Image (cartoon, rainbow, N blue to C red; front, top):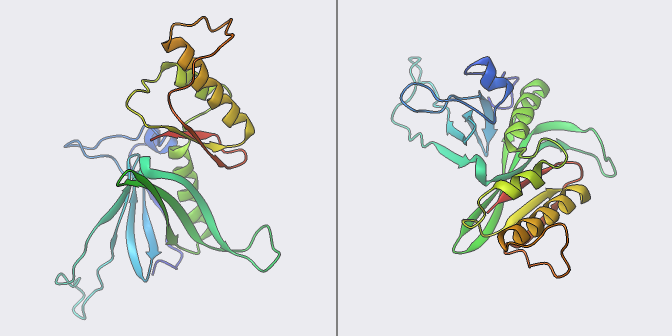
Length: 224
């Protein structure tokens, strides 16, 4: 049962587990899983596998009376690309007025997909009441999602990254992150226009729009 005290299994090399952003590849070009565990998704218990590029899950087949899994039931695997996940949080049940703590219910993953030139967001709940299980997954997911690692990192990336293939930049963070990314976009626009970045009286407008999702101290951004 996904609501039980299922334990996460950390797979792959210790180096990959310590730095999930790098991930790894198994023989045959397949990605090395970082974590594998059981969660309840909707009304079904699912086998969930996390890698640096994908989060995928499939329903667990019930066993027949003879002890064998029922192979006649459909077992469709679903997945979401990590590049489409913009946030993750621990899901808790709280009383009215309660701001901290609460009963842990699992993990919520927030996804944003582009459909017909529009962005559509949704939330997927991975339910499991085990504190150790959920915190292990939460930390690993956060490590994969975090793009910036130190103050000024976003500015350095925006100065070096090829931006022509992107439609915009979305900042998930606080005032400092937003200011840094806005500065980076404007600075990059001046560099591309051949302007002297030390003396700018009439700056060139940044070609990419900037979207902002307030998230306190979380420093990360996404190209879309």
